[in-house]
Image (cartoon, rainbow over all chains, first blue to last red; front, side, top):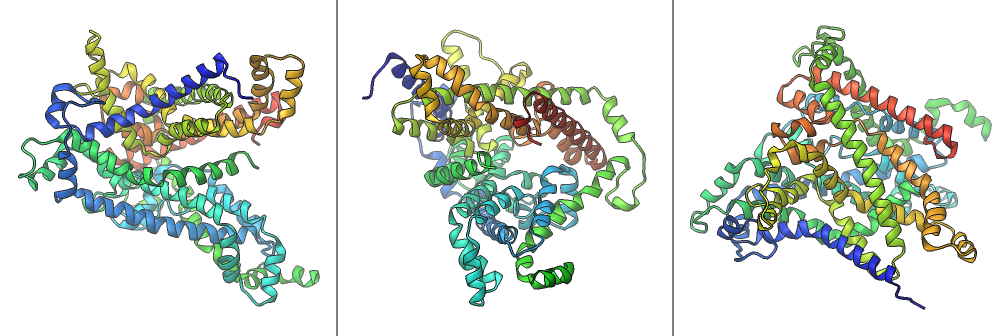
Amino acid sequence: MKKFTLFGTLNTMFIALFSLLCTIPMLLVLMVSFTDEKSIQLNGYQLFPEKLSLGAYKLLLLGSTPLYQSYMISILITVVGTLLAVLITGAAGYTLSSRHVKYRNHLAMFFFVTMVFNTGIVPWYLISTGLGLRNTIWALIVPSMIFNPFNLFLVRNYMKQIPDTLTEAARIDGANDFYIALRIFFPLSLPVLATITLFYGIGYWNNWFNAIMLVDNKDLFPLQFLLFKLNSEISMIQSMQRTMSEVATTLPAESVKMATAILTIGPIVFFYPFLQKYFIKGLLIGSVKE
Amino acid sequence: MSDIRKRKGVLGELLQNKAAYLLALPAAVYTVIFGYLTMPYLLIAFQKFNYKTGLFNSPWIGFDNFRFFFASPRAWEITFNTLKLNTLFIVFGTIAALLLAILFNELKSRLFSRIAQSTILFPHFLSWVIVSYVLYSLLSTEYGMVNRVLQTIGMEPINWYSSPGYWTSILVGTHIWKDIGISLVIYLAAIAGIDESYYEAGRIDGATRMQLIRFITLPLLLPTVIILSLLALGKIMYGGFDMIYAIVKDNGLLYPTTEVIDTYVFRSLRNIGNPAQAMAIGLYQAVVGFILVYTSNKVVRKINPDHALF
């Protein structure tokens, strides 16, 4: 039944070409990270470099560089933050979706209002500093990251579909709200919880705004912020080199930058199949429904 | 039963369902602190704010912060840049995603379609910092691939990072590259939701492929396009901080075409250290943004009430 028309072939070729064009810039970064520094200085950034080298990765992974510290910070805030965020959002989602809670719609309104009236970064900054979050790990976890009303409404809409009879049966058996939320609602809402886990997780991993606003202490720099600083402050790379004098004769500044970028993308590539599946699910619940 | 409920009042309800309300407490506390408590701080736009004296004891100076901002030529420049960039993002982003979705919909092979979608969606998950590196690998004056290509075909290399004229197109292109995947997925889902019988009827009447697209697919996609555009319009005075600050940083040469309200507010707050001034600009941003959304929604409502957001 499949017919191969001229249009069909051209269309497939066009889309293949477009996808390739979308990928090339990222491949370029990948290739540069493996390119010998002299080769870069001679030929610039190339997709097919003259001479390959592992120098940048050696410097980054074997030297005592700030990379490890930043990786630990990024993993820490992503894991702890996402866990807390999903718990907070899931628990509130239970309250808003429970029919026996009389003021659930008032509560929903209370959360909705802050979604509409955004006061911007100045009050956000003053409150965060006022709470003493500056230069603490919590600055990277709490402000604007740990709870998002949009995700709350995703969870509520999903949990609303859970039949009341289940809750009632559990109540008759003497279960309280904590038990029902944790043991009945959470397991039944795994798909939406997976979706918000990804929303929060990606948010934490990619966040550098909190760091630029609230953190000056180098030991607390998350990976993204280290990367942000790296491009402008070559001194950071130089300090890496000083600890690695036996490996590098010339400073592989260009490939080190790109290698850091690649190491930062790493986890995203690793989780991508999972990410894509639940991300699209959540996106479509959020935008097509309602 | 219902009589007892009526009599017990607010406190009674809170006590009876205290476990359920406790579960919402962390989210509520967060919302009070980072939502409701931010609102009084809007007032510092009318103060000569000082960190020591704080919100309650700083002297009031009326509209001086606003006057100072609007007196500088930068005010119009950054407002113009914000509106210009966001409008171009919306218009070109929508057109590109719609075209691509229609082409994707004509693909016969599901597998190929899925692989291509995954490829195009990927950049969406990268942070703007990473994207700034990707862009730099293309545009770096010394080593960038674009300049090397220009040289091989006998053209002069261009000093991209000091030529503001190119940056409107560069930013629009980069924005489309990063986010076209997400709109593509949404539009494809919307197309998949169109009833197949419309197309069958069209085919029986002898409609060509182009006519099916023109008279069935596009009109039925219109509500989705309008809703997404209205949502984007809601942020038309905002946005771009992550993108523009990651890419442009403090490169003053590019400010004439790239500085937007968000980056300007950031600089007033963090580099210059004047929160009151920054708040005044933020308030201006919020008010103009609200007016724009409200008006555009009203226009949409006039044309077709079903398509309006509120």
